[in-house]
Amino acid sequence: MYAFGQEGAAGRRIGPLGGLARLLVGKDATAADRLQHIESAFEILAAGGNAGVSDADLAAVGGKAASQGDGPAQLPGRRSPIQSRPAHRATAAQSTTWYGAQVAPLGGHGSTQGRGHQATMQASEVPRAVAAAMSTASSLGLTADDAIVLHDSNKLTLRLLPCDVLARVAPVAHQVAQFEVDLAQRLVDSGCPVAALEPRVEPRVYERDGFAVTLWTYYEPMTPREASPADYADALERLHTGMRELDVPTPHFTERVEQAQQLLANRDQTPALADADRELLGDTLRSLRRVIGERGGAEQLLHGEPHPGNVLTTKNGLLFIDFETCCRGPVEFDLAHAPEEVSAHYPGVDQDLLRECRILMLAMITTWRWDRGDQLPNGRRLGTEWLGQIRAALDRKGLDTPR
Image (tube, rainbow, N blue to C red):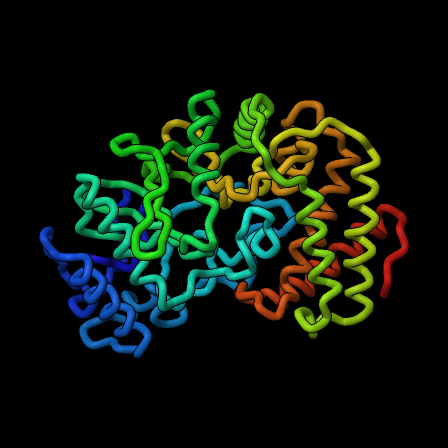
């Protein structure tokens, strides 16, 4: 069975589709059979079909507008509870939702690790991606009769059942899965708080039907899903300690800044950005890139985006995931992605550098929101709000800002 849905703390589906989309696929079904059933389910939703499906079911899978709230769970510079990522609703046509609340993918466009600006996998690719994951698992002796979409971003995240494996699937041409697998394996071996690969199969990238499939340990979400700032800081410090010992070729964080600058310089790609706002973002990126570089502080391998969306709360404690945006830079660049409360518990932080990194990071993600290809729901509204936050932050530092 292939289900769209949401999982509770105990891993149960909440509001699965009714008989219309409960398309049973036998254990002996071929890959073509699986794909046909999966495509049928997506076609039903795309056509707006609802025979035998309740409004609650449709809302649970995005078939009708579900109440998600208009804003992000946490905007940079705002205080909020630290939420780890639970499962959430997902459909073929769904916009990016970071585990129950709309937030900005902090490094979505322009990641030097190859993310690109696409917020979600193309709808036409999702059924094939699901089929590829299920077929891969089955070929490795893992029973995969059921797939639940946990997250749809630039890669698809699935829970395969009954083998209870987490599968991440991305088009072969747009992924850096081997890098992520190798790094995660080394970090786990070093005792870092990192989600582990699936131990029952060889830890590598599996390619099928044009997709790269990686298989990971599935961690049951814990209740409550909030983590204390002290625990968050401790986990991040232990991650940094382990990463400090690794010699891994990764881009410098300034390369991501440069890509944001290149996007700003391309007016055809950012036609809706006002001249004053373009000047503000350009000046901010240029000046802070220079100021942070001139500090000459210690640099090391970083996660790149250790925001709450990339942290799991498990019975084993907090675990970091998603290492495709790794880069080199000061630890303050990583801390800039975490909630403000976390830095107070992280030892040896340069508070001035951290403030500069926060503004720099905010300028980068604001720039992505003005890319004409940006798919983030309410992205333009968020971009406008963040422009105001940048001006306020620069005013507090006593710097001139374009109006």
